[in-house]
Image 1 (cartoon, rainbow, N blue to C red):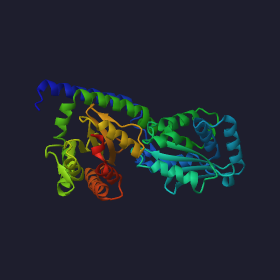
Image 2: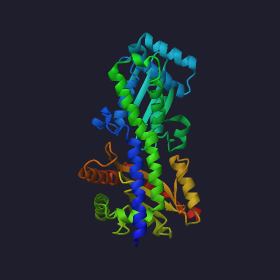
Image 3: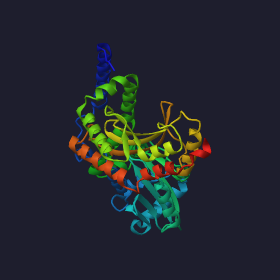
Image 4: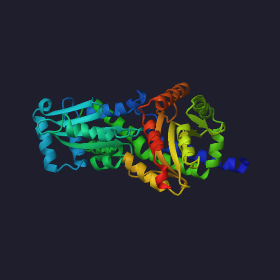
Amino acid sequence: MNINDKDFYDFKLKIELIKQYKEQKNLLKKNKNNIFKILKLEDFEIRHSNFLSWLLDFNRNIDLATMFIKRFLKRLKFEDNDIENLVNNVMLNPEKNYEVTREEENKDLLIKFLDKKIIIVIENKIYSTEGIDQLKKYYNDIKYGKYKDFESKFVYLTINGDLPLQEFDRLHWQSFSYKEIKDILTDITKDHCYKNLDENVRMIIEDYIYILDEKTESTMDRVKEYFKLYEKNKDIMVEISKYVPQIAERAEIEKTYLKNNFSFNLESEKQCIYIEFKIKEIEDVMIKNNLPNDLFTAVISNEPYNKCMFIIEMSKDSDFYKSFVKDFRNNFGISELKERNGNFVHLYSHTFVVSKNENGSYKTEQEFKDRISMALKEFFENKDSEYFKIINYIKNYDFNNIK
C-alpha cells in the first residue's frame, strides 16, 4: 500500500495526542516508589495469588483479614448473618477453624472454614485463559474428592470479570474482577480500623491499590484510546509495523518454525502482524471431502505487540458452517464464539507469550524471542496440548452429513 504524507502526518498527530493523554493520567503518580513495581511483581499471577493469600491470613494480621474477608464474602452473596458467624468463629481459633492454601492440587487459592465445612476455590487469571475442561476438572475435584462433604463456592478471578469459556463453568463459577478487589481495598482504607494497622501494612495496601488501578480503570481507558486509533488507521499501522524491528524479527522466528515443520504450509513470506498458514492435516481432510481449502485458517498474531497468539478461524462463506460451529461448541462446552470482521468465526485462540514491564514495554527483546521459540515448540509438538484436541476433532468430523 502507499501512505501519503497527509495520512502519515495525521497518524503522527494522533500518536502524540495519546502520548500526552498517558502522561496526564500518570503525572501525579509518576515518581511514586511502588514496591510492586520495584520488584516487578505486578504481571505475575502467582504473585497476585500470594498477595490475596496474605490479605486473607488471620494468623498474620487478624484486623486486615477480618476487614477483607467480610467484604469479600458479601460480594460472593453470603448472607450478613452467615458472614458474621463465620468470621466470629474463625477469630475464636484461627489455627483450628480456618485455613488458606496456595497451589493445593494445582488450585490457585483455597479458603477453608474448617469447622463449618465451607470451602471457596479461587482460580486466578491475569492474562491467560483457562484450558479446556480445566475449571470443570477443578470443580469435580472439590465436589467429589477430598472436600466432597464441604459446602463449596467457585470464583473465577480475572482483570475485568470475564466469564469462563464453557457453559458448564459459567453455571458453577462466579466471575470476579480485580476491580472488585480494588474496590474492597479502597473501602477498607475508609474503615475506622484501618488507621490502627501497621504503617508498613497500610503502605503495601495503598501500593497494591495503585497497581490494580493501573490494571483496571486506567488501563481500560488507554486500551479504548488505542483501539480507536487502530480502527481508524489500521492500514497505516500494519504497514508501519513491518519496519518496527522487534515485530519483524519475531515474525521471522515464527515463520522459520512454520517453514521447518512439515505439518504446516506458510501462506506468504510477507506477513508480519498476522501470519496465516494452513495445517496440513486439516488440508488433507478438506481435499478428501471436496471442501474449500480456505474453510479453516490458522493464524499466529503479533497484535497487540506484547503478545504472541495462535488462532484457528473458520470462514463463514459456506452453507454448513453454522452446523459445524454448533457441533463444535457443544463438543467443547463453549457458549459462544467470537467473530472477526463478520467473515470469520474464531474456533480457538491461545496466548503463547505475554511480556511487559511496569512501563508497559517489553522485557529484554532476546528474552521475548527465546520465549516465543520455546512456546511454539511446546504447544505444537506436545501431543497432549489443546491444539491436538481441536485438530483431531476437525479431522474426525463427518462433513458429509452436513453438506
